[in-house]
Image (cartoon, rainbow, N blue to C red; front, side, top):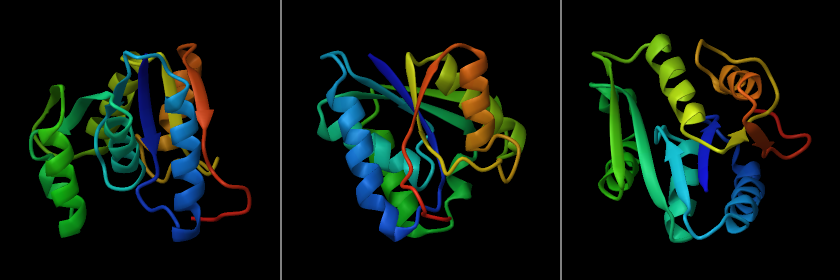
Length: 157
């Protein structure tokens, strides 16, 4: 099963356990051919990718642009990105030369188009910029891709 992920980069600490448990429940129900599809952004994407690997799945990484590494101001997030990237089964880099909202939107659409199911770590609010989680969720539903939202009630970003 091919499972994509889209989600917030800044997850409140009190939500991490709930979100990890929710993602684990979804991917545990998948068949033996588990493929996680993600852009490995900080936050939800990296959490999802780590859980995919823990459950014996493979990673298909869709990198939004050639200089994507410059979008990680936090050294820990950058190191986690590099580690997860090194574990990828397949890496696809989009043709955008630099980070941009258009690149993020296209990467999110590629995640959806490559997936049977989308896990959205999403608070249900509108996107804060073009290509945000809300945009990707709406794209997935417009394409008939099932979306599983994982977010604890009452937690605000």
